[in-house]
Image 1 (cartoon, rainbow, N blue to C red):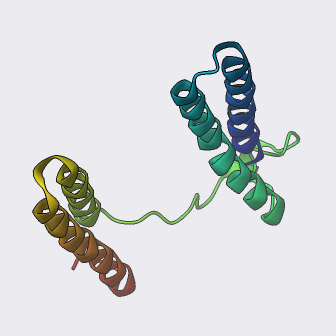
Image 2: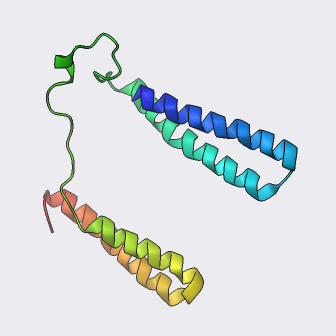
Amino acid sequence: MRTEAYVLLFIGAFFAVVCAIYWYLSGETSGTLMLLGTAFLGFFPGGYYYWWSRRMKPRAEDDSHADRAAGAGVVGAFPSSSVWPFVLGVGATSVALSLVFGFWTATIGFVLAGAAVLGVIRESRRGGLV
């Protein structure tokens, strides 16, 4: 986790420096805000990964003296396939399209997104397909 955190924090720092230089040389607002958003897209997950890397035991990938056997065993628990992420994506798309087609599309999107959230919760509690 620590390596991933450093990579993302470096990306955030790079774009923060580029943002400062761009703002100083051009004075333009929209490009500066986009570069600032890009810097935050590096800082937020990088900070989260760094926070977790300090609170969990080091993985075999993080230990420079680890051997091949240290990485053996169960990697982690992964969720089974589900339709609810697709339903959430359709709902989010409907909400975004409400800017073009009107508020009625947003109501459909919010209903779909709410159903997807409830479906994921129900599915995770039962441990299988709903």
